[in-house]
Length: 358
Image (cartoon, rainbow, N blue to C red; front, side, top):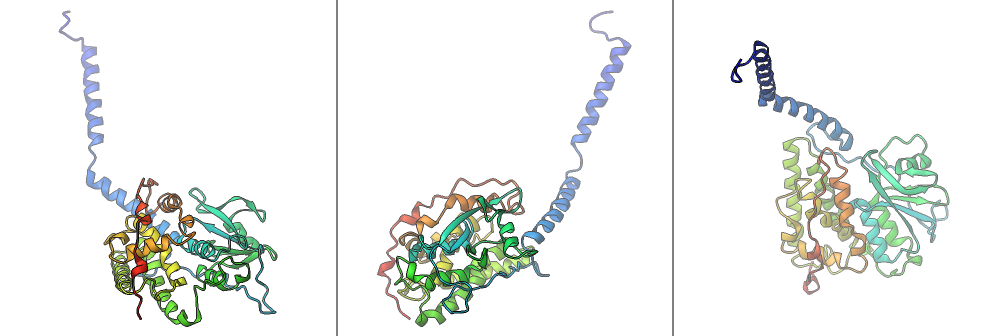
């Protein structure tokens, strides 16, 4: 038999190989539409389940932030369990968290570093909770701290947490209230006690800004990022940029929100603005405009960032890690971007030249 001819057995083997090849080729060409539909159904279902745990919403798909549960105050009243004292209180914070960041800024501005102990916690990607750097109060995680403070606690275990080392419990876990206490109740231990970020004469104006900024900006970026319907997202995004435009306009004639005096309203806005171009613009889809592109807001952000001690409270890498690395439903791949460059925050702001007017 010549080399160019095959035996019957070889012909059968070749035919089998061709059939196998055809089957494999056919398997690779499953209808792409079916694969896409199935994939979208599975992912959407899983996404909705995860989002319901991460970000509870109403029937319209709008994110509803749960209220803080521990709401005690520091104060010198005789019957107050939590008296002002240096070294008695510990603050648990996550460097990526804007709500916790507020407390660090106030501590820096007031000079309370020696009076209030600060303990940094970190988000665990695998456990989905804040974890202590090392065990404290016989606890490894923030949820365990909450259980020590209130056995059987069923709510969210968030930061910041103001902890009383004397009674071994949580005093308060609402950032808006903690910064008021840090501003006024520990002045005898503050290096910059004359700084008043919540003065009586400006309090009404401060609260007006606080209310507007909390709903549309501080929580507004989360309402955009955690929106579960297009309608909910559109509504939140409109509100967010409407208020940002309003703030930008107000800052034309005011160095700070309430005039020439720095207040808690500025601090509460600052921690959101610092994260805006870094995280919220992309991950939370707040991408109509960057803060640095605003005529006044960009310079205002630089002004606040350059206040003594404030830049040291800002940890860009922690912010990116905590958002991009831990919000799995929004970034399943967990890829953390290399940028942006925030060196522009050190550029001159010229805000001291703004003439404040009411």
